Length: 125
Image (tube, rainbow, N blue to C red; front, top):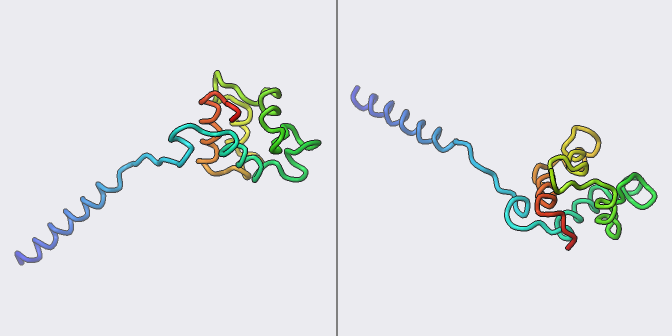
């Protein structure tokens, strides 16, 4: 009888240990929230592999032109980036919306890369 009580108490304590390990944790995405975001290495890579596709955001396609040679100037001169209120930047609001653009960059870390680049001044490196 005593042994059963100890087993039950042990099971309860073990359960509490496991539950306490399931607390909310902050997820850190590489290059999305740690250190500077590079336009050429981080942001442009996302655009060229997901957006600058035939019939989409390329020269002669749907604005902005996100092809490698034109993306930065197209975003800045087209008013797609707002460094004053980054979360309101059209390039960011479109990729977080539930529309067609979100299906190309649905990953939170991809969206965060774009937002952090804007927050860091939207520099062309």
